[in-house]
Image 1: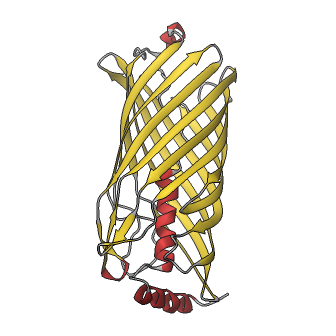
Image 2 (image 1 turned 90 degrees about the horizontal axis):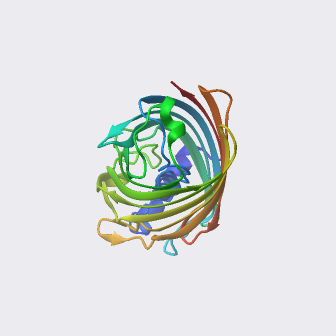
Image 3 (image 1 turned 45 degrees about the vertical axis):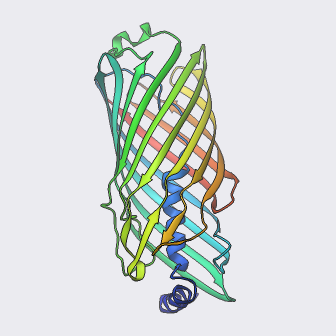
Length: 314
């Protein structure tokens, strides 16, 4: 294994020769794209009882190849990610309809390697990811009901909107190529629907991510990122009380970056496929298993992801 100092020397060479597009800086951007763009979120707009609280603790493992833009002389790039996630959510009534506020914090460890001009460069780092918070309002078809009255809710169409905010508070050092935090505000408005017929749910949603500039990117580079659009669809089957399985897919496009005004030619045009299984042990405890993989990868990462989440409701 090469020493980290050798990695820094090779990365610096890449910076100076190729318009300051850093080797593991690109890897870091792909990591944040993976976190923010490849989410598969079944039942995001499903109606739930109000006045409830949820605590969640999860673990995620993800690894795979990177596909940089044609302008980057990078081969056999690979990244492994491990993350622990802590989440909280609260459901409440808003204008007579069911709404939810949620937030999450993460601790992330990354290890990457790549072949640059027949020289293997490697690096690894751990840090805290940018915290995220979101407000979801199901404004149609989701009457605000207490848990004891929720059985009265009817099948049918639920339509909602959401706004998620990612705060640039994660671990970030402009003197390092890899960071767990992105040092960017991310605004994500979205709209979605859920349609229930018997034991079947059909979900669809779309969102746009709007990024602030990062004027403290590595080597005093100013980073800009264009808006990115994501579309998701889910087919969910309720196996029994507190038990369901979901088949999910998404498509995300856009998000091209520029560094000091020079386009990186790294706009994405990718999609993913995933499975989720959820099981409630009782009215308080449940767990969720999920797996996903890349289906189409033009630019970005082709990751395989496994995750486990435990949830406590009260």
